[in-house]
Image (cartoon, rainbow, N blue to C red; front, top):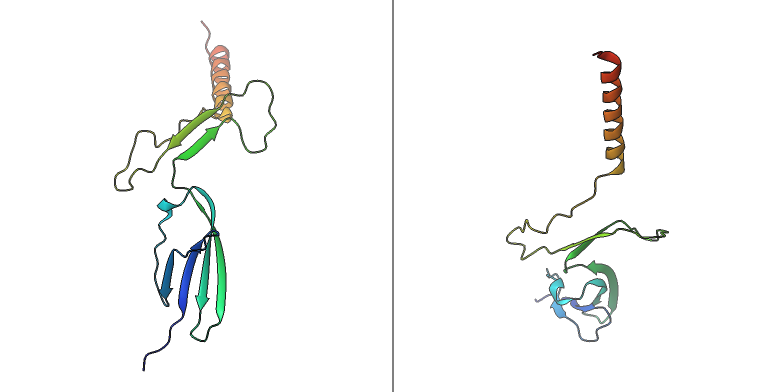
Amino acid sequence: MKEAKSKISLFVDEDVQPIAELSSPVQFELDTRKLTDGEHTLKIVSKSPTGREGIRKIKFIVRNGPAISIEGISENEIVDGTVPIMLNAYDKGNQKSFLIEGSETPQTIPSWLLILLIAFVGWSAYYIITNFSL
């Protein structure tokens, strides 16, 4: 005797046409390369052999495009005058080979490192002046 299985329909965002209609249990690969970058909702509708329906919605964010790195300004920051901003955008490539060029974001030297360097140089000058006489 063949067991009746639930039917599963998968919808992305508010599409009326499902991207897949499958019988449970199933393993499914969602190809996000066909979606635009940003927020999306995967809606799973399950229909039992008796006709009852269950719905589950899962929100997710797609980021297939190049990643964008920003240094010099952050979210909701209060700024005035001229603000130097460093931007970098880099892509993952075809994920079969690693791209070195453009994959790292150059960054400015952290201010705490500059302060530490100035303190060390000042201490060195003080030590040389006080301990060595000409």
